[in-house]
Image (cartoon, rainbow, N blue to C red):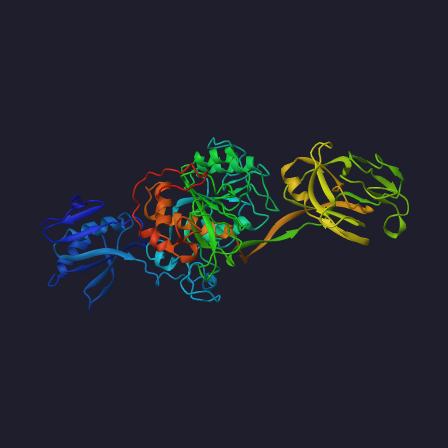
Length: 615
């Protein structure tokens, strides 16, 4: 029989005469340039050599007892094609790639034993197997670089050694520093995501939350170091909209979610939320074809009664996630909801990747103001006052070491129903990615938990808003500080700062005395990388995002509704969760991968205002 490469057929091949069946698996891992062949008994050396000559293969090793040959094939012949050629020959019993094998799919990452949420052996004192069964799931797939997961959060420390290999790279940006929007998506040089706070292409994490979330999803597995994510391989798309103190705006969240949708994210992780309903935020989620995984919230309340958004939106692509501990109990801080929370996942003392920070020397933005150069009612010394109730003045010999101070109600107690402010009226220019600290000394008498010294901010010098507060009595001057203006500097190009007094209708006191006021900023740097234990529904959501990624790695054509159904319908049923989440149980990665994708239709139950979709 003449053998030529014209016999070669790609994909699946059935040779009925020899009952040989071969099917290529595009997701299989095997050694490039090598195939394993077993010849039938009584096949002569001349016949074997003739077949090798046809393919150009050379024998690398012969396992004589098994009759198996390990072959090296030429560079211009793929493993799949070589296998096809050999199995068409009647003298060949079988041919296959030289597959890579891992030991029970338990990775060699040094801290894997600490990841109880993935594999619980009771190592933290919890109950064995109160986990998501990830080793069993990894026997099916460990992920795929084809899957893009947007982490809309505080950014990602993309140089972390356990994450750097799994960071998304924008294929449309041909040059990351040419100042040109190469792909025309409206963002210049966005090679690895976007910072919607600073409006720049550097989504570095100066908080730690987003990096921690990313590590749970896709820290590089089996790399002999650190931890392993639910997915060993994926592409994390870093999108920063939450700042140094973990706060951000709805507008920036909407922008980030829309960016994720336009740039190919299959999954969007939202480990944040609040009680305010935003139609714009819901519309952004609804406009995405991605699976959107949301933290249920950390208030310990029922989302069916008091919704937590975005987790409680009636959107078919949302999966809302509560938190269990190492004994499979719903944690006290976790929100829940039989109709509005879909499933639970581990979220207590979860070890994951974090950045470590360093800070520049402090730069004085304002002060140090001692008020020692003048005495009298405001406006004075660049300060003005307003509001209703008591007035503000700089008073003599009332400050630290009997110097002057700024006092809210000179000559007496503050009044009932006071709402006054005293502000420095030169605007402060914001510098992004800086930690702002306001230092001040104060003493005073305030009705505890009813009357307050407020620390205020304004965007225009007219309308003032509280960023922090103090209450109670301090008989001597005490040094104090607040970081509350860090959030302000990240959201406003410039701002005014000051203080205020807010009182109720009874029990008034002497009020407050303020001295030695200064505002400084420090630039933040990521100078090293580490790991830390965090707790919260923020940590539970990325477990679900990772499992959604594993499902899409195995079934690339399923839609967000099918992914959601596969996850919710395959939960491990837990009695304590029966009336707390829709699934009645905790996430199980293996079950989810084995579930039938089923129908691609999901219908939201809009009557509850929740995401109680048909499953």
